[in-house]
Length: 351
Ligand code: MRU
View 1: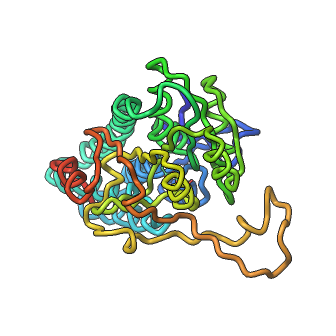
View 2: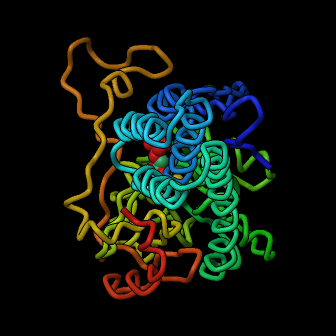
């Protein structure tokens, strides 16, 4: 299994996703600041992985704290939360993880400092294990939606690398293959950061899953040629009405899917569902730096000084989404009802 991130005795160890697929190298972060940098620079990326990295960064901050009182420890804890909060705005799992660690801290206040520190480390490790279990549950449920054979398109990377293991959208595909379905994956390359061609293709090939990389602008013609029987993607934040924020380009794929009458599925854990955000227009969209668009692998491909836009995510309106697969069940329209029902009991830790 790919070890995207893990708590070790020497710190939080990440596979460096900026180096894949040509180099498989690992980075160990020993401070909250280093974890915040790893999230900002996308050494670790993908909503669920960002959430657990956040929790582990906070756990590192308390582990390394020189505080002598609970108040001082809380000050170090809060500083780390604030630092990580500034890294990436769209993936709600980051804010969900901060909230869950805050709630855990509050429940521990009367305990001695060493016990508080250990309990927060244990909480972060528990979130890691829960994420893998959620992905496996989503996989089992979502696999039933996929055709018994044929092409399945995915966008960006919603795989083991975007989570603590197995993946959300790619977990659904993995489970379908484990159930004996003959799936061939079409992976959009996902300009400009190329998570599809660099990461999705890498991890699927590692598992021996048949994969074809296409450039993003080929998706329509693949659908028209009948090569795509279903689409499955992940999400960075799902609003209460079922609008889905995911990697930019997802919206285009969803519209193409509707035109070609191909089901469009979203797989995401409950930690990605944000019932406090009523609809997609209220989801903050991260704007990334211009060089991601004007350069590829450090080589300039657009004229010096040209105007550039680089929103990292777009919002697919709920009406384009056939179903949303979570670890608790499959939500169908109307999502304002089905998501609220699934999230009962989970809102304790939603933001
Ligand atoms: O900018 P990224 O690479 O963090 O964006 C990732 C995505 O958009 C994924 O599709 C999403 O986080 C779901 S991951 C299971």
